[in-house]
Length: 293
Image (cartoon, rainbow, N blue to C red; front, side):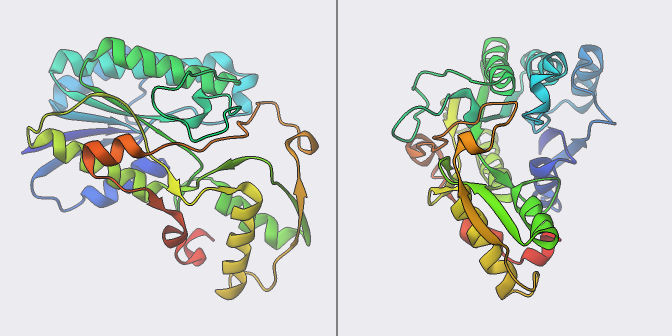
């Protein structure tokens, strides 16, 4: 029997992890949302790990308010760095592996090609810097750590771009969408599936190369392209009576407190070779947009 401890269990990915693990007879799942376990509390983390005695910890807890982090750097650091380190230290003490979710924001987005795990990181925001520092803290504290960097996460739980577009589509007849930032939407359910596949690989005793991996969706698109597809489907499925008119914006046209990477494309060769994990098919994963309403 494998015991998995999941933190951030009510978030986008955490909720999907709990759903997918439900009914697995070979896995005992211990799911903790923020109210049940504050990962910034080192003593509480250590106690929770000692009580659960997990083989694997999946950290789906994070401070993800990208713009707010610019004015709340300490709050972002507490969760993304200190909280991650607390989990890594507890995992190492318990002899458990740690699977930790990170982000494309560890890169500045100025590259011309999809980013590989070995490419130089250079965060351009407080959020990105705290996530990178969290990666370093986890890898230093727990040798059996896998960092899963992902991007443009969407799902039926929590807030995300799909839900925002549907809300704005009901409220406005015209929308401006950034068209010069490129990446790949990634379904939270597919991130959960990838994490579970890695956990199963580790639990089976297979040789595992710990370290950093990239996982995201395919094909690559701009935010404008993604929005256009959301509205096309919303009208076709009867979720919206009509689509708003979309105007292409540049990043300069839409200033935000935090700098967004222009290139959020991630190279997925490493994770496919190591675990046989294919990219997230975000077009298939969108499914029925009624689920996002």
